[in-house]
Image (cartoon, rainbow, N blue to C red):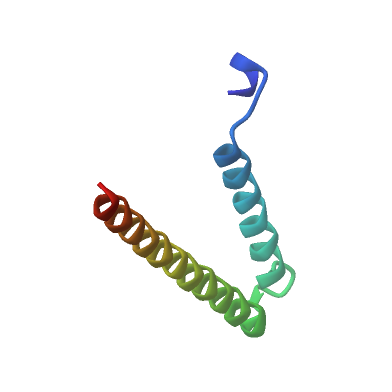
Length: 78
């Protein structure tokens, strides 16, 4: 998008940030010198992913419920 239009979408920015975050996390998790994985860092990464997933589900449920209520009120007024 950036080369074609001179702009970049929010989705593309989010995707790039997520990719960079995963790469940084992977570097923190795996110690190349001794070929070990930091178990605490791995656990923290998994917990963060679960929290984000749960948060997304809650927001989606709230949005769906809000849309249903909004539709019901609009139909009642017609």
